[in-house]
Length: 115
Image (cartoon, rainbow, N blue to C red; front, side):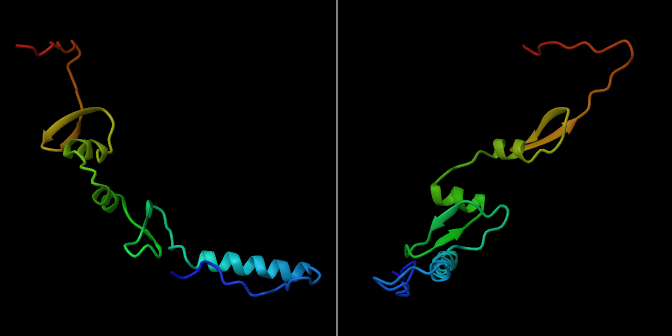
């Protein structure tokens, strides 16, 4: 496995510490670690260790669910994808739509709908 950081030997043992040399060493450590991480963008999380255990991989939610063995309900996905306000009507398996209820001035009678 590639090391995260390869020491430069600077400053050498027993030498006086120079601020510029120490800062340069910390910069090298930061750069070496940054080069090992994947580029991340919005929505790129979560992260997984790759199959060879040598790097991190950014993935999307669907891939993460598959890798973790999470079975997501069509019903929950349908509700999660609904971007509306008001009443919700189930229009099919995992499908939902927003509905509006408009009634006459006299009002609407609502029953419990039990048989």
